[in-house]
Length: 151
Image (cartoon, rainbow, N blue to C red; front, top):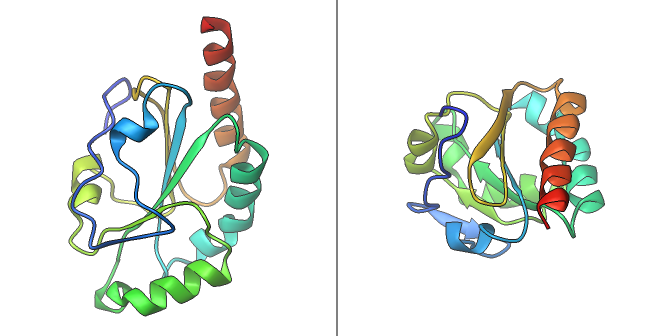
């Protein structure tokens, strides 16, 4: 997915955990962070405390949605996804993408992967890998500041 493109519709989930959201729910008031993860991804689990801290710190200013992207047949077990999500305190809505519909819409190939959309739903930042939380935070803060200036 290229920068400055519009957020895809959040359709095709095998199941939603922690509540379902639609694209229309995410556009307008706040920027959105959509992060892809997988139960078989060590880096995802390692980064999750930082993602959760981020989610909690910006809860009034930022929408956060998780997308579970399976990497193998073992990753499509809904009960295991629920268990790992609970173990890692993933309380934001989780789009379970067992058929890779949203993964394909995002043209995403990586976990973890982070997509930051401004409040109009335009992609402003993308990064993949476990080490980029500092850069992600800078980008999110920039999008938040732009939103404040526009008010």
